[in-house]
Image (cartoon, rainbow, N blue to C red; front, side, top):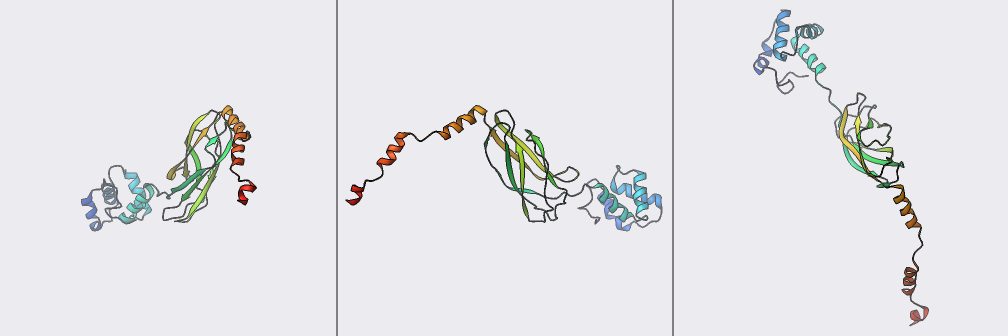
Length: 216
């Protein structure tokens, strides 16, 4: 890690930073003191001593090691491209599938431990879905096998792509369904099974020209 104004937390004294290249001492206590002044009061004497000793008492190397250790790791990137569920109206307790098309919009491949899990909302009984180590710029489809709640109404659940530590990667995914009551679903099925009314058949027959009309 380079030691410059863009990579050092804001609390570091910029005047001391400008003098960094001029610091040339072999006094270990002075090196500890200089490192504490540069990195702020949160760095105690024992921690500064540890990183300096690990870096063979090289101040610049010790600061780089400390920042690499303490700064949060950069997470991969993910963006939602499209979402489609198989059905919008579902019976209580019915199984269904939901699809998301997601893309790696970062500069590095995803680790193989990434998975999609439910993070909130109505519980859909979704097991984790592990995604492949997707290269940058590539897309993949996530297919979640879900179970609708038993109570009628509109239900929404939220899902995250996470790494092996459970840190969220990219956009929040979601699914929304309408659970119809059993009575409503039965009524819809009965209506769909009804024959076409005879009046409609008569109208359709009347529209067909007779052979005599065709000869004329």
